Length: 142
View 1 (cartoon, rainbow, N blue to C red):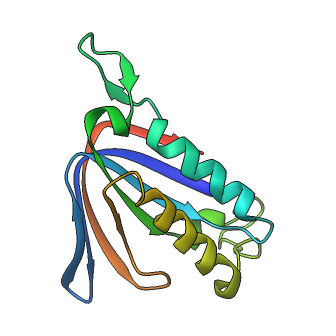
View 2 (cartoon, helix red, strand yellow; view 1 turned 30 degrees about the horizontal axis):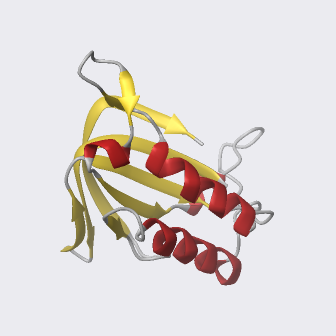
């Protein structure tokens, strides 16, 4: 599983020109699910994201988590994170999980996160347009 976590002041996601979801301060998370991923990798991500300390405390140190600041999270499926470019000019997506395997894992991640955090999503496999007001910028790879 490849994940890009972006700290944002806000983010919105549209599908076919219509706003589908929107968050205020929090995390915008792109998730690429690979053929070898299982519930174990998904559960690791579910446990990691709420506690990831990438928000500033009163001393301007990155000591606060999404839970600490009462932030929101937007989780977006993104198979292109699995693209391999080493030796290629056109990415190879051979390691990207097939929809019948990846979609249930993505849905599991979203459902479990929503039990502890205000969680918004995209639509698996849809053509989505995302606007984000990055904060920092702080981008973390998991």
